[in-house]
Image 1 (tube, rainbow, N blue to C red):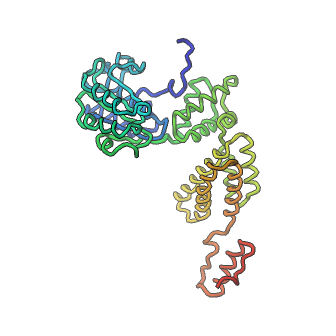
Image 2: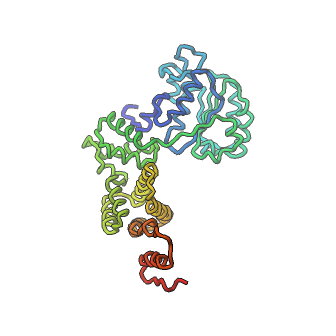
Image 3: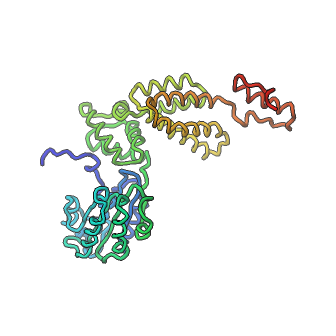
Length: 390
C-alpha cells in the first residue's frame, strides 16, 4: 500500500549484528558461535524494554536461515539479505521461523503446539526456529511442557527466548539456555544514534536536543525513536529540531538548568534554587522528570568525586539520601511539584550545614572544647539549650 507510514523504530530496525548498538560483547559472542558453527540450541535474551531483545532474536534467525552465503550448509554471521529465506523473514512470513507472544499465548496447549511442530523438518531454511517473546508470562504448566524438548531438541530446532523479567523464568529453563543480558544503551551513544536518524529523515537536530531524548528514554532505543517520531511531527515545517522543541514535546529539562539548580542547592541557596525550579516546570518540564534529572546529575557528581578520591563527599551523600527518600512521595503526591519544591528547600538548607570534618576539633579533647563542639552543632537548631544535655 503506497503511503503507508512506518514508525522509526521499525524503519531503522537493525538487520544484522553490525547494526546493533551498545551490545558489542553479546554480538561478538554470537558472531563467533556462528562462524565456528557451534550454535547452542537455546538462547535467552533479557533486559529492559526496547533495547533489542526481539530484534536480536530475528537477526539470529536470519543468520541461521540464510542460504545465500558461500556454504549453504553452515550458518553465517553476515546474512545476505537477498536470498529467499532473508526476504521471507523480513516479510514475517518465513515458514520455518515462528514467533510467539507469550503474553497472549500463555497456556500449555500453545506450548504443546510448538513441541509438536519441532518434529517436522525445515521447509525453506536450514533450521526450525521458535522465537518466544516475553517468555516469563508462560504458565507453570506451559514451562513444564516445554522442558523435555528444550533439553533435547531435534538437531534442526533452535529456541530463542526474550524477557524483561528474568527472575520470573524458572531455573529449570534458565539452565537449559545460553543467557545474555542486553544493557541499556549509554546516553552518549544513544544521542548519536538519534542524531543520525534525524539527519536521515532530513532534519537538523541540536546535540543538546538529542541528549535530552537519549536521557529521557532511559537507555531504550525504541523509546528514544518513539519520542523522535513525535518530535519530528511537530517540527515538520521548520525542518530543524531544537532543545526547546524537545522540552515542549516530552516535558524534559535542559541539562544546564538542572546543573544550575543543583549548584544553587549545594551552595545553600534555596531562594534561587526554587525560583529556577518553578521556571523550569512552568516551561513545560514534568516535576517527576526534573526530579529524576536532579537524581541522575547528583549521582554523576558523586561518582566524579569518588574517581578523584575527593574525601569531602559527606554533604553530597546526605543530599542523595534525601532525594531517595522523596522518590515515593513524588510518585504518590497529588501535586508532585509541591513535593519537589519542598525537597529543593530541604536540600539547600541541608547543604548549608557545616561539614562534620569542619566541626571536629583536632586538638586533644577536653571538657571545654567538647562543650564548644556541642554548642556549634546545637546552634544550627534554634530553641535548643546545651544545658539540657546531661
